[in-house]
Image (cartoon, rainbow, N blue to C red):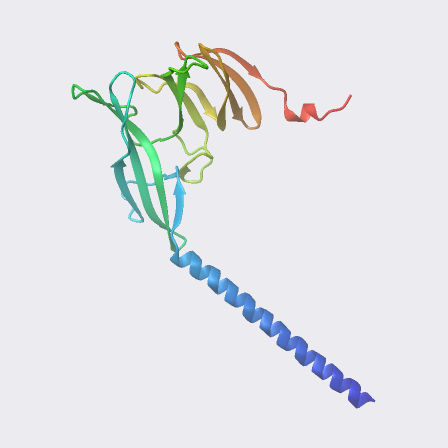
Length: 233
């Protein structure tokens, strides 16, 4: 009787050990596969600019012009794009489609850059057309978000950083921020002469009414904190 019990226990232990060894082998194979994928594949991101020193040998930067477009006044607007390739944690990464400046060209050969230098990331450009609801509309202004600082300290300029909002005229003359240092901007309303933006900073939402012609703030209103909406009477 005892011999039968010990034999059964021995077989059970042998099976358990074999099963555990198989699981360990399978787990090790999965880890090696993930490690191999991480080591060999390129990682790709858009609208992300790594903040580095100019002499950093781990990053290769390429500049190129994007597609030109004609402004309403006859000038041409050409984006300057930055592409970065760099090594991080033993594998290669690539960032692309990063607009860092705009070049404006006139038919007479004059040229002007929107920003000084290349230390910013421009993103989320939207055109404002008037008249509202009309068929023959034309662009009267633009909004453009600009990341100027690495506010979250991850050594990158990206949508996760605080942004400024510029309201530019139809000629794309200058990018003077009308709103600054917010996490996000959202267009929520407009009239013939104004534009309403919901700007968020640290979960606080403020509605700004902007004058399209003057590029100034006409009115602002801070929305109640979300927590107050959850309080029941």
